[in-house]
Image 1: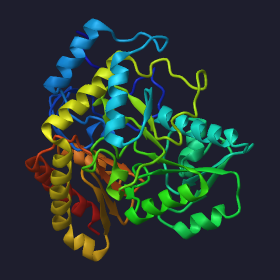
Image 2 (image 1 turned 180 degrees about the horizontal axis):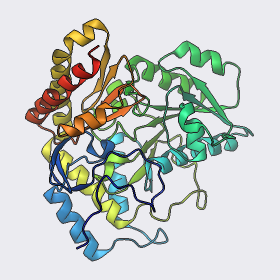
Image 3 (image 1 turned 30 degrees about the horizontal axis):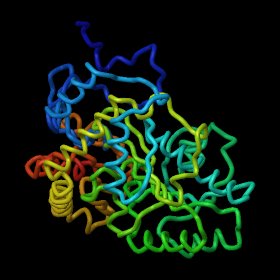
Length: 403
């Protein structure tokens, strides 16, 4: 076996697109990982909301090992029974009707945008427009980057794709004003909880109003559940807290517990927009990825991980709030927000340095939107591990905020 390179050494052959910590992870078990130097970490990042079942889950490992001996990849020229099985399960859980499979959240969001445009063209609209939101993040392709609401990640990649109307989050009057009299609008595209934008949840009343507005105008309601879906908030999909069903729902991240899986689930208004030849994905829906998705959902249902995400997430949020009560009162911690095991702690100043400080103390986190500590651990997290997150993280936040 080759000896891993020193984690502090930047590879001369890999494009420098990530600001990496000087850590190379070797293996994991449950919610813990170890680096190549033998240091142990509690993983509160979960591969950025990906590792639903944690690391080295025995059922997932066995299922993937078995699938590798059968088929890894064939082609969408042929029927794939596991694809049908996963599609049927997602339809059952969502109350929608059809699914398309790809490999990433970016691809799922790109497919959603294509659906919106063809929906408009099929109605005779030559230049369809989609409503998107401040601080949104939908991906880094040219189209999804254009839908994203972050000038920093857009810089250097113009001209951006046209056809987007950007409005502030949770402000229905602003949306109505921005679209009034515009017959080119075909869809509203929104994250139920913004992830990269700072863990910003949509208000439940706002979601219900969005559903009603889209029904009124015959627009598609497209809810990006890439980061907040798959049980992370305590329901299968975060929009379900509002009691609504979207027309289009992109998924990825936690769907395969680490194996790349993306999906677009569609309801009756959008399910038959695509015809043969309109869209595709070479790797989308391959047997290995589909086995990962089927097994992930099976274990989630068997082990009650939605309830666990809700209860452990509430325990974690309560612990963070109590430990940072003085900072919340002073305003140096502005807010602790989110649902289930998708939580953000917004500080009053940029706090990117906390990622390294936490790693030094054996905790993996991320900082997003410059000043928000993001916690998106695996859904198998225990209350004891949640208490450990609080015990490590909160003292480091207090030291960081000290004058």
